[in-house]
Amino acid sequence: MRLLRVLVVVAVAAVLIPLAGCPQPQERVIDEPPEGAPAEVDPAAEAALTEEQPAVGMTGEPLTRAISEAEDLEVVEVSGGEAVAVDAEPDGPQWSGGRQLWWYDAEPGDTLTLRFQVGAAGQYDVILQPTSGPDYGKVTFTIDEGPATEVYDLAAGDDLGLAEPIWIPGVELSAGEHVLVVTAQEGLMPESPFNFGLDCMQLKTL
Ligand SMILES: [Ca+2]
Image (tube, rainbow, N blue to C red; front, side, top):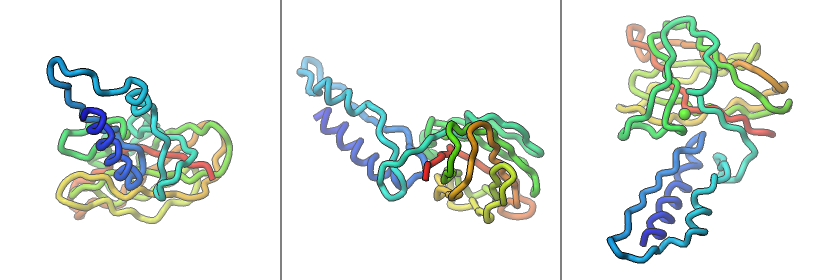
């Protein structure tokens, strides 16, 4: 039964993961066997289940990609408000790595600048996994000196959730350091506090 339970959980996770931009923490609910019950889990099978799963893209195919947790990226500059790493709540969105980078109290026009590393020069799709929430605001994204993206409105729902992943396609990146700049556009209402959350970013090779 225990192995079956694990398989069911992994199967459910496999269905859910392609919907999100970044791999979510694998939920593995494993009941302890009753006292005296023989071990039902083949050690080799359990070891295979705990191996890192291949990254899965929006269409379900394995992709070559590098993932950075936003909360681990270097904050180069915040022109207004504060940017801090926050832990996931049990009943909140399950951010990968269990945390997100939360930027709050910014004013329209303020920027959050994050540094990320690229291992090999090339053309990449940059995939961002932001958070949505009732008091989350509108933002644009810029990579290095590139053009700003369209405005993304991340105000949604009654609770925090994982927004649709944002794809910035075909970005030419050299090996080394680059910056992702998030620009606050406006809160839900002019007088509303501004919130933005980024769970993780991925670089997908083309
Ligand atoms: Ca994260």
